[in-house]
Amino acid sequence: MEYFRKTANKRVEQRKRQSLLKTLSSFTVTTVVATVAFFLPVDATAILSAQSVGNAIYYEVNVSDPESAIVEGTLYIEAKNNLNEQTQDLAIGQSSGVFLDLTPDSDYVLTVHANQGFGDKTLATQTVHSGAGIGGLITDTLLLTERDPLQHFMPLSYQVNFFVNDPNMEIASLRLRYAFLLPYEMQENPVPADDAYTEIGVDIHSLSTIISDIPDFNATVFLFFEANLLSGETIVLAHKIFRTPVRLECSLYQTSAGPTFIEATFYGDYSIIPSIAYTIHFYSGVERIHTQTVTKDLASMNDDMRVFRWENLLPSSLYRVEVIAEYSDPETGSTVTETLSSIGVRTSAPYSAQVTFTEHTADYDVSVQLNDPNGIVQNVQYMIYSISPEGYRLYVSSGVIVMASSGNGVYQGTVVLIKPDTGKYEISITADISFTETEVMYGSVLRIIEGSR
Image 1 (tube, helix red, strand yellow):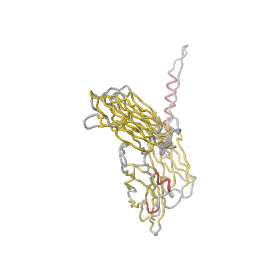
Image 2 (tube, rainbow, N blue to C red; image 1 turned 90 degrees about the vertical axis):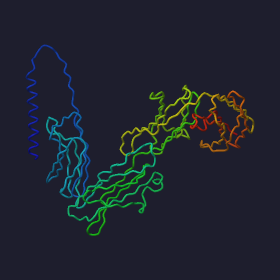
Image 3 (cartoon, rainbow, N blue to C red; image 1 turned 120 degrees about the vertical axis):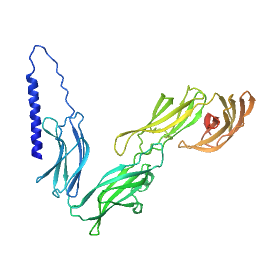
Image 4 (tube, one colour; image 1 turned 135 degrees about the vertical axis):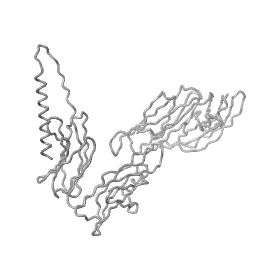
């Protein structure tokens, strides 16, 4: 086979030279000076990864040929040592294979060859030391479950594929033991306990099995591929650790609305990938009218929470907010762009509110005047929080402010609010806004003040 391949390469090279000479001989010399531009072709490339499995070598190769320059029938991989060599044909793209019955305990050079019209060329090479006897490998962990970024806590299933080299037929049966740990468990102990593993048999002919009920919550999965020998001994053929796809726990919800504005609160998840970027899109129908990108704010104690406000909107109108995450996948290194949330938000019918705080030493007199001709405000209430030194809000008290009607949709209410004893505090006046007969947004903010004692 090698003789015919080399002969074919020589013939192709000879035809290229003849074609080039024929083209050159057809040119006529004139006094015109021409500018000739040479466009160099993009060479084919290959990425090769190989490892020994007993006295065999398993390889994976990815060949890229963007300009289809590789001559058909000339792409192959070779395994060679001082005593012998083997070759196998390859195809463009990703492929895998195995070289069997190699010389034990020997260095083999694996080389990917191709002819791009100008003779044989090496695209990739790797030296692998062959072993001896039994060997095994976990070749693939293929995700079978179609994930939905908007659906939480869904179980995942994986197909696990294997390769086994058993030249002396010593294996009686095969099994896979697997376990998983969630991120908080990894912090306590990065290795699963022995009793955390599930054991399943692996068919010795198909060399494939399925593992199920892996949580879709940034789990780390541990695999041990083992063989029970005819001698009664159990050996580990291979082990592998991999992580499930990134699952981000984010939340987005509308927190306030008026006739011409909308506020929404977003909580980002930076626990898995601190460098993640979130892009918030605001839509009116299909038109994107505002975009903002947020990243982790190292200077903020509440770096996971952001409040967005959109103004100059139309009353009683529906809008949409979408959250897009972009990050580098820690498992593959590739850039991932994922839609995490898409919610409808709306402005209210026309109303207005004026909230006045009159401060005293120990309390506030609060006056609320509400102009609500459409009767959409159902309740007005207050919330008092103390602010911890770390910047977190701690609930102190809350209550309803009684609103008395003055006629023509005008309402007034007053209340005396006692300041928290010490430290910083926050007082918010909110209202429950009715969008429709059945849709109510609770706690729309009318005014917030901060103070300290």
